[in-house]
Each structure stands twice: as structure tokens, then as C-alpha cells.
Amino acid sequence: MEIKFKYLMVGLCVILIGVAFTAVVFSGKEIKTSHFQKDEISFDYPETWLNLNQTSPSEIVAFTDPQSDLNVTVNRQLLVAGYNPSENFTTNISDQTGMKFISHKTLDFNGTAVHENVYQMDMNGTTVQRTEMWIGKNDALYSIIYTTSNLKLNEKSPEIEALTKNFTVTNTTVPNTEVWGKVSIPSQGVNWDIRRDTVNALGSVYHYSDSFYPNQNGTVGLLGHHTHFSAPFANINLLNNGDQVIIIDYLTQKRYVYQVTSNGDIKGDYKTNPVTFPAGTFELTLVTCYPPGYMSAAYMTHCKLMAVEPI
Image (cartoon, rainbow, N blue to C red; front, side):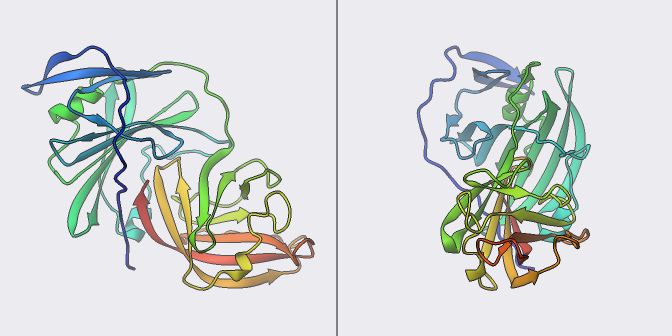
């Protein structure tokens, strides 16, 4: 399977997030730090890091280090009903996609358990390491994710320790959400939120509660109207084999690229024999009503996972 990875570099912006600089020694190296605080999240970071534009709704802040090949994001994604993250946030999807899982360990951030996963991937002929640090708290997933070609960089490196040493998430009540990602169909130029609560919401599709999430070993099922409520799947009958369908998953901070393998699967008995979403394969099924404007049958488009990319 040919796997593609890419990291989108975004433009720099000037944002004032700290006013005091402090020189602290980390692992024998003196680093001047600035302070960041937003709502329940606070931490220090090297003053040489530059702030980047936000690239996803779950991203709290992003940095790049102009002195090295290092990009860092701090994220918060609210959990949706029915989602149970695995204890160490690892999945066997890496074995299927070429995103090589390297290691997992449990760390301690000021008394809070943190699950660290390290992955390696090929990007334009260069091996790039992606480290994810996950914290489950306040009915949300918090993460520090850093990507670099310096394979020796780890949680004990001075620049990373400068961020994690005082990283704090205080107890708080966060708002509920039913949206955990977006689905896009590039050939049709459309993007829709993915919800867990209803198919009858404008600008979104419904994630079947008995189907899987993209990082799980099973079929993801998405239901969208053909003619009502923004009609997100009005044109899925026009998809051809090989066309892409992309899911941006805020829960795992990854982009899942699927390819259409078959279209026009019509199930006339779906009311008595519901559409199923089998385990054991990384696939995606798009479902809408058929014929358009009626609910006589279920119209399905089947896709298979081709690539996993960082957001």
C-alpha cells in the first residue's frame, strides 16, 4: 500500500502570549522562557519559538522553532458521548498504514498521568518523528504534539522539558460537543462536520453509533441527507473509483485519507436488515437515502483507507 504523509507549514503571525522572560536551566542548558496561559491550560516555552496560525478548531496554540526543525502544537478536543479512548492512545492502524509506531510510555506532569506515543514516518525522503503526549481530563483530550527530523529529541531534551516541566491543566467544566471531526470530498469541493447526535443538523453528517472511529480496526459509517438539511451527500452518486474522501479527526489529531472502491450499492431492505459496519478492516461507508428525496432504500459508497497524515 502506498502511503503518503505531509506536514502543512503555516504562515507566521504575531500574538502576544507572554510578557515576562525567565532564564531556567533544563538538563544543563540555560533556556529563556516565556509563559502561555489560556483558560485551564498554562505552561512555559522557549522564548525563541515563534507562534503560528491556528490550523484546526482543537488547536490551542502552535509553535515553530526557527533554530531547529521542530513544530509543536498544544490541543484540546472535547470528548463526545460513546467515545472511549484506549488507555495509551495507541492503535494498530500504524501497522496498516506505514506510520510506524516506535514506543509508548507513561509520564508524570505535575501529578497528572500523561501517555506518550512516538511514531516515525517518511516525509519527502526524510524520516520524521512525531511524538504525542496525551492527557485525559475534564471530559476532554489534551495533547502536546511535536514533529521533528531530529530523532534524538525526546521528553528529556531541554527545549521539550522547558514546555512540559510546568505544563498544567486545571480542573474545569468544559462545554459539551457532538462534533469530533470533518469529512471532505475534494472532487466535489465540500466539507461537513461529523456529529454523533443527529443527521438533521445543517452543515453536517451523522456518525453511526454502531460503527467505528477512523483509528479503530473497523468500518466508519457516515449518514448524510440527499436533499434536506444542507444535503451533504447530494452528489455521492457521482463519485468514481479512486476518488478521495478525507476525515479530519480532532480526537486523534490525524487526517485519514480514503479512496472510493465501489459506488451505487443499494439496499432496499435496510429498515428490516440495517446497514452494518464490519470490524477487522479500515474502511469507510457513506450512506444516504434513495431515490433522492425518498427513503425507499439506502444508497452506499464504499471506501478503503489509503493514508494517515498529521493534521
